[in-house]
Length: 211
Image 1: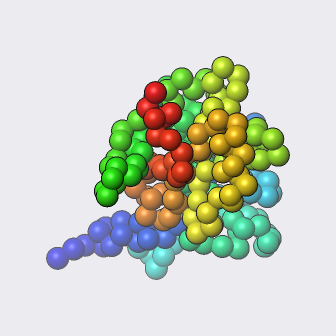
Image 2 (image 1 turned 30 degrees about the vertical axis):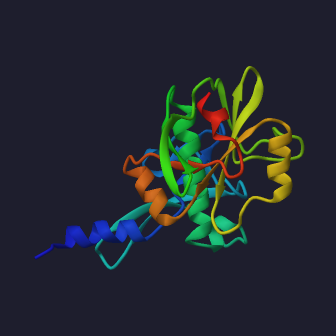
């Protein structure tokens, strides 16, 4: 017979909350590393001040998370599911990339009639990682990867809405590889458990990535 601990773990896998925030230095901080005695934390979307809470689900599991002090129309405060998955996946990836020298990922590639998964180091040749900055004309990629002082790769986190054709065209004209990752609750929890991200480079030559 499965005990309460088993169902608590399952509950934690199903429920998704805001687990990433910015401190006063605009560093990204995971909820388990939050220390409210020495730092203040701000919403990564609206920049409002956040508090740290433990939500108790019928006494089974307390889930530590960031929350807005007051009601606001900020997407991170109003919505669950897709919006929070997008925020959590994006900031998880940024934090990992920012503090790593190599980062293994899989690239989903179409080979004839089937798909294959090619393992790559997405940080190969990368010198700097930036989050949500206007680095490509008027575009603000989710994550920008710099090499030789220029943006060479970008990461876009998508949920239900695909990137616009205009954005894809700009990246293509500037010779920037755009790595796309689908965000969901399941993807976020898999990444937290140590799973490698799976990207695609829709409509772009894979040979540029493997060169």
